Length: 274
Image (tube, rainbow, N blue to C red; front, top):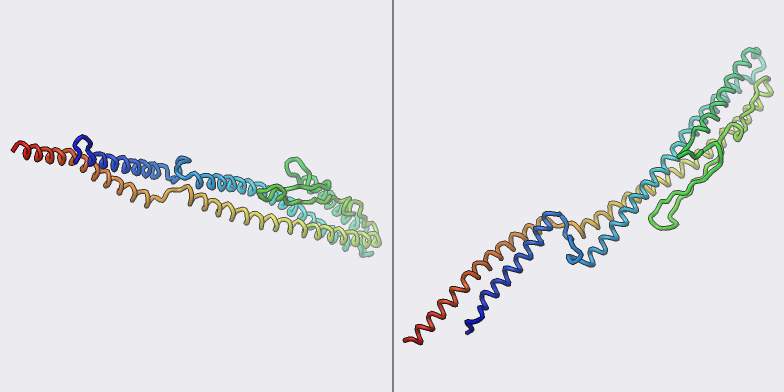
């Protein structure tokens, strides 16, 4: 037996230090809500979490890009719908003018209506703008970063849609024959607008699919990040309670260790003296 070194006290003190360390970690995790508050808590896990966090941020930016792309296609689609309606009005007026029974004043009224509709087509075209860039008055293109890696892009091509480009800028219904010629030109223009509108609609659908995919990735990566970084509050609360019990027990043993040796030494001394 050793009396110069109190082994029981040292063991009890070791238990107190260990319990305090667990309590400190559990308290920090409960307070912050994070399982990893320092790199030393989980070096490998922190590395993975940082990569996941970066990917979440990148996908969020992709969502911003896709949102802008969708807005652009919506502007063009809405403008094309209005132009299609105007061409329908123009065609009705031209068909009405094909009748040779019309009075000159009636034919003039139809011509005035057609001219007004055609002017409005150019007005709509000039007002289809995104960030000061025309989407319809000239041919152009746009590239959208639709993924988080280099090269993950989606291209949008924009046709020039004006009355002149559609071939309806100089329609005349001054006679029945001219009106018939105008109807043919209008039908070609309507077909061109419909074809282009189908392309824009398809691109809008592509952007919608990419948006859904990016949204799913944000959710999935965020869940994975949370599982690594977030503390399990129930587990940490249990750890804290367990460590508190262990500390209290170790503290009680530390107090007892002195008296245990004291009683043993006293007994030995009495034996020697007797």
